[in-house]
Length: 257
Image 1 (tube, rainbow, N blue to C red):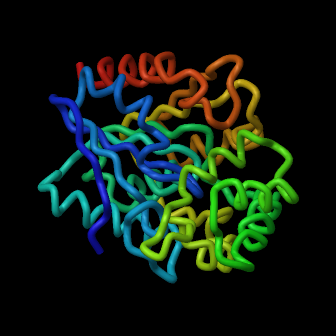
Image 2: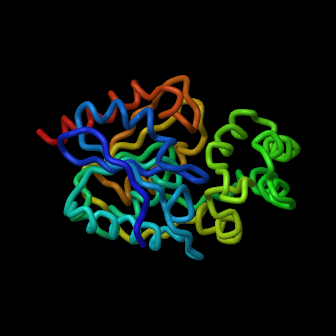
């Protein structure tokens, strides 16, 4: 599997991994700031963006796909930043192959199985949009709006709506595979420890990381530190890209000394 990717900047290599329903462009603002200090690699995860589709969305499979990408790029050891689902992919890489991960930054996700289904309305909207060929972005948004109240979420999803050769539109993420295997996405398997330096970045107004997750974080990532980005939600990197980039750069720089 060859993942779609983008590279910008010069310096030590740094990999950015997006979250569910996203693509490499979702971390573009953060990447542009970090590229002032690092050679930044952005990827589309399997079943997202322009990367190949797969029936498997479990974190071991996704981690192996990303590690294959690192091999293709001759990157033996690299620092990794992952957001949400991408953070879980990064954590799985780090705990399974700690020698390949120099340092780790996890944005607004914990190494736990989440019991709450947060995306049922999203899948309902996406499935409604696909009942007939999508002829315009306006038509797609109208279908989504019947199920998704937040216009920001609708606009986020519409970034992955692409025109096809026949003039209709389709989603770049694999809706069927993601929905069928959603429990793999919300789930988590503890496979060991990552002893390296780790930073957990939490959106101040997000509930994805809470006090009840502390024991699991410390058990799996014994050298973890935490930082709360005030006045941000789950998409902290989009709300305050310069602040988040500054925190990440400071953490990586101090750890390299």
